[in-house]
Structures are given as structure tokens and as C-alpha cells.
Image (cartoon, rainbow, N blue to C red; front, side, top):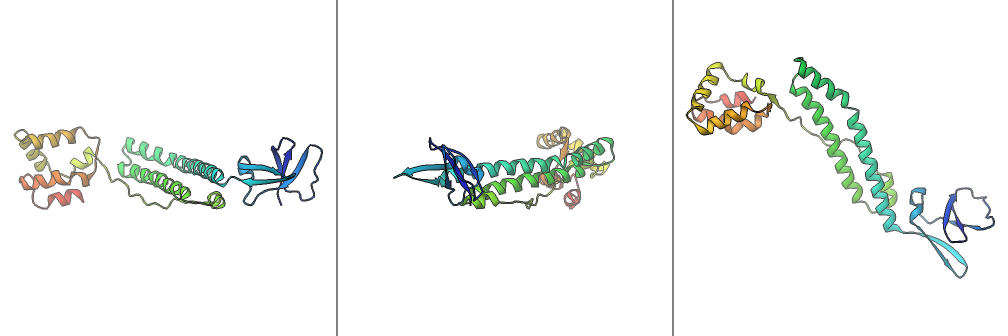
Length: 221
């Protein structure tokens, strides 16, 4: 049994789990309320009536505090998990810069880090939906959200999917077509491209006869 130590000013000064503890001058010992733990000490309310001292727990305040504490812990746990992947991200970026890797390697790590973020966000939502202090404090979470890698290509990798003849035809046609020229300029100023986002432009190239039917799907593959 947990005993709360209360002074003459009716302030809780500590607690003990020693059932044999005896009160001493200036203090009295009162059983802690159900659900008490050290983290909730600030939310205990001392009541004195007809010479009898009782302690109750402000459940609303305790629940709010427990949720805030657990969500803060989840953020810290997620930060540690993300930090543990820093070496993977650095390795992938360095290998890409040296020409030994590609954006796909970086994207795999980015997806792993994003899965941690989304899982921790979901965990915080789950904590805030709980209505029991004990359940909040006992809540655990894991990285259980699946995040697909963004599947990016460098501009060079994307352009390599076109034949020389296709590239020449597109550039020649762009001089006379404002919309096509804008697409080419956007491509020229992009560090990377998501093939799926280029679908509309590639289909337009097929319609314009600048690439053969079926080439859009092949380029996006």
C-alpha cells in the first residue's frame, strides 16, 4: 500500500510504500487514492473533514497530464528511431553524389523515416483517445504504418528513358508549342522527377506523335 506523507499545512510532501512506516511529529500518513503513482502526485487533493484526512485524485487533470507526458515520450522515442537511420541516409546520399548509388537508395531511407513519423503521429492520436490514466501510461506503439518510397529519378535518369530521336523531336517541337516548351523548361529546372507525375505530359507527347503509342507506359515503367 502506498502512503502519502502530509504535513500540518495539508501539503503532500512525499510518499512511501513501507506499510510499517509510522507517522512522526508534524506529519500524518494517509493511504493514496486508487490509481495513484508518483507521476500523479501533483494531482492529488487533500481533504480534511471532521478531523479525518482523505486524499482524492483529480482524474481529469491527471488524465490530461498523463496524455501530455506519454505523447512527449512518443515524440522522443520517434526522434531516437529516426536518428538511428541517420547513417543510412548519409551513406545513400554520399553514394549517390559519388555516382555509386541513385535516388532510389535515398528514397528507401526517406520512406523508412516517414513511416516512423506517421506511426508516431497515429500513436499520439490513439493515446489522446484513451480515457484511463493507467491505459495511457501503459500504452506502447510500434512502427506499423507502411510508407512507399517516392520513386524519384534524377533528370538525367528520366531523360535516358527517351531515345535520341525522341528527345530531338520533342525539343524541335517545343519551339513552336508554348505548352510543350513549358513542360521542357520545367523538366530542365527539376533536380528530380517522379515518373508517375509525368504521366499526363507523356500521354500528350504520344497524342502529338512525338513518341510512339505505348512509349509513355514504357518510359514510366
